[in-house]
Length: 317
Image (cartoon, rainbow, N blue to C red; front, side, top):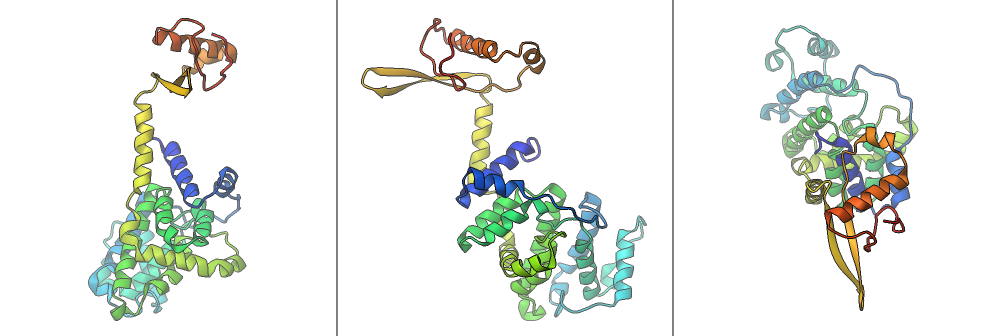
């Protein structure tokens, strides 16, 4: 569903995220509408080709011998060598970049940060930034479930790159005895690349830095489980698919409302409407009348039988 019907999938994810945070309809609407901001265009968005180039550096830095390098992301590198590596990675040349023999770990680490900084958006995307900030204000036990839902909203290329990067950072933190880089220090360095929009003002970044760093720390520490699809999301998708499997069908159930009182409840799913026919005969009264008559015909009910319409319970049959 994420690929085949992204609008429905994203709507379900946003609904479950809002429910996790206890937001009402108005609060949820304000959260996901967000504010439109003007931002400067940088070197480019996340494409599959750009992901492949960045992954080459992540793959090299993810080697055990690289991860044990002290101050792997903290120590500075030779600017000339870093720029040379960036130029070769960003060029259209087919020359093979031999990171293990031509460049040091610190030069590769500096190039990685530069490539991430050149992207137009953080990997968690601008769309998820307000939700990430609000999540950071909740109790900590809600952070991991909330992040699992937010990560489902990240587009394919960004999601792939974010997963590779977080797994590498998780491995870095696991070797902090050698590299002196704990998850909190890594979160401070990569927070701007992962969650902070480029349009965020310096004073806003300073104000929210503590909160965003804590959320990013959780992303680094729990990278191995964050990309698992939440069970409640699986259940929601299955429910939508179950309903769609009976599209165009009418299910009638009898419901007892009290002594001697019985009413028919109609649950109807109508999809893939013939739009041209609707435009030709656009009268809502005529359309509802035909729907109601179709329901009665399908169930062999005479005109005037009790029926509760989801549109208008007073519609004459």
